[in-house]
Image (cartoon, rainbow, N blue to C red; front, side):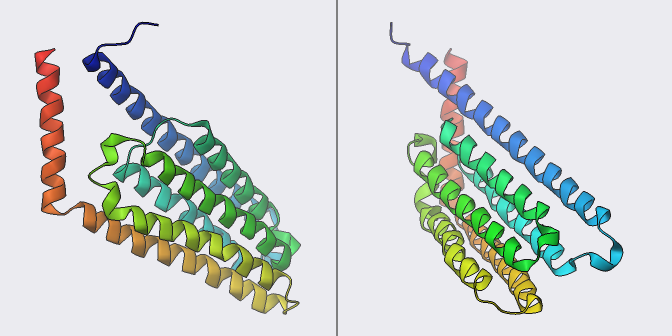
Length: 225
């Protein structure tokens, strides 16, 4: 196999990276919209008097927490196209689907499903971080926010044993439902705080100047070609 010229290889890498970004964003948009529609359908199928509104709210917050951070991560960083990222994203979507399916099974069962969602979300974040470190495109940005991304991932993984402890505690359903809402709210708030800080860090003047210089060099390379 003959090696490609440096310019051609670089152009191909950019195209592959952009295609992966678009595909992954589209995939997760479909996941989010589809799961929100399924949640609404499940609620409407239940008799009004039997709708578990705390668990419905917790499911909605969990859904937003799962994918809001992912969309922001995709906006800040670029990732090589890897099957493991897609598989973990599918696993997270499947876990959320099961969690929504079990709305009428009670808060104990719902919490067990939510633990699977937190586990898949944490592992997915760590896996994407590992992939992002391999792309030179992220060299300026990633050192600023890597610690925050890892903190989000470990916080999600930390919710797994906490959720399972509540599920097995034997507390009344009202308490477990409140715990479900509180845990989902905590995950969403933590996600928003960390990613808000990350966006602020990556908007520093020196980082933006470095990004503009990289774009200028890419433009000059295209003109020379």
